[in-house]
Each structure stands twice: as C-alpha cells, then as structure tokens.
Amino acid sequence: MHLSADRPDITQAFIYFLNHGLDNTEALYIIGDLFEVWMGDDIAEPFTIAIAEAIKTVSNSIPVYFTHGNRDFMVGKQFCLRAGMKILPEVYCTNLYGVNTVILHGDSLCTLDIAYQRFRRFRSLDIVRWVYSHLPKKTRLNIAAKIRQKSVQGNQQKHYEIMDVEPSAVTALLARTGCQRMIHGHTHRPAIHQLTAQEQRVVVGDWYTQGSVLKVSDKGCELVTLPFSETN
Image 1 (tube, rainbow, N blue to C red):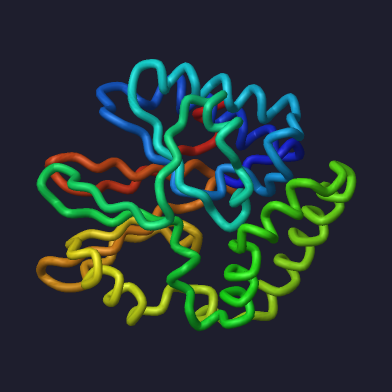
Image 2: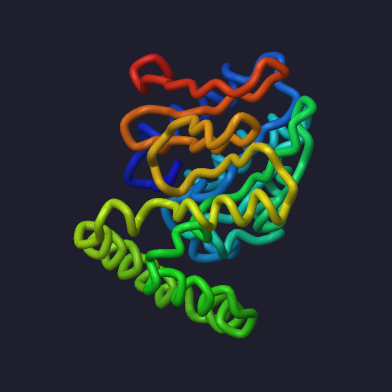
C-alpha cells in the first residue's frame, strides 16, 4: 500500500476497505510495504496512529498478520501491538483451504538485482538495525527521504527483468518449503501465474491508483481491484 502522509487518498481507501471490505473474512494478511517508509515505532504521525486504530478494530474480530517489506522493515513490536497485528517470519508457510501456501513480501526473490540484495543483507544485520533505531529522529527522517529518492532514481534505470522475481528463485523456494502456492507482493505486477499443473504464484498489486486485494477461499484465488472513487 505504501501509505504516507502525502497520499491521504490511499489512507482513506485502506481504512474504508478495513471498515467495509472484510465481511465473511477469516483472517487478513498484510504482506509488506504497509507504509512508504517507516522511521521507527517512536515516530508517530497522525495518519499512522489512525491506521493502527483502524487495523486494531479489525484485529478485535479476526487475526491480522503482518510481513515486513523493504519499505517498512523497521516496523516493530510496539506498533504491531498497537495495531493488534501478529508479525510473521520473512517466509511463512501455512495451509489455506487444503493448499500448502508460502507467503512472503517478495523482494528476496529479485535475485538479479545484485545491488539491492547486497543492501538488503546489510540492513538486515542486527547491529545496523540497532544503530538506525538509536539515531536522532530528524536524522532518520532525512535518511528515509534520501532512500526513497534514491530508490525512485534507481528503479528508473533498471530493466524490467532485474526488478521482477527470478523464476529459479521461485522454483527453489517452492521446493524448499514443499508448497504448491506462493503469494507475494513487492513487484507491483498483480497476476496469477500457473507455473505447473500443481504450482501457482500469485502477485498482489499496489495501491498507487487503486486498491488491490487478493481473496483466497476454497474456490481458489481471486485478485480484486478497488477503485479509489468507490472507497472514499
């Protein structure tokens, strides 16, 4: 969703979805990049508080699970407790209506983007996360702004294939986990890919110009688009 203070339309659409789009839902999974950037649980903005309260209302009725994305990897226990979300491991396996399913954000599958994977390993180090979390708030805000600017510039220069998942990485993860279905986001290319007769890769879309929701039931997977004009 990449929620941010300068895109109130996305925030409003997401809160509308939480309030009106979860009838007959057993659980909600938020699989990363809930926020455009996250500077730390100790930096609370009005819109993030509103998001936490809206998610908390949902979590009082059904489980809400959260997977870290590359934008909000610093979301911590404090915010998740406030929102009533349960943090999932980076790679999470579960059985959804009889289908063994692996759920993840998806950035780890973009193995051709060597520079990003190098940065990803660096920012995942405990010492790096500790140092970042103890920097002054103003410094963290400046770092977040620079990361976002650099990312936009870098993505404009990268080829389509580099920014997408690598098929061999998908195959390897399905084999390692013993799952038949993979669900991820990150690439902003919503689609249901039938890899083999038994294996499937499902990509959830972004919320830049419309909402994107994946519904999983005993009938299979369905990608749903939510026009902002109907959710505000």
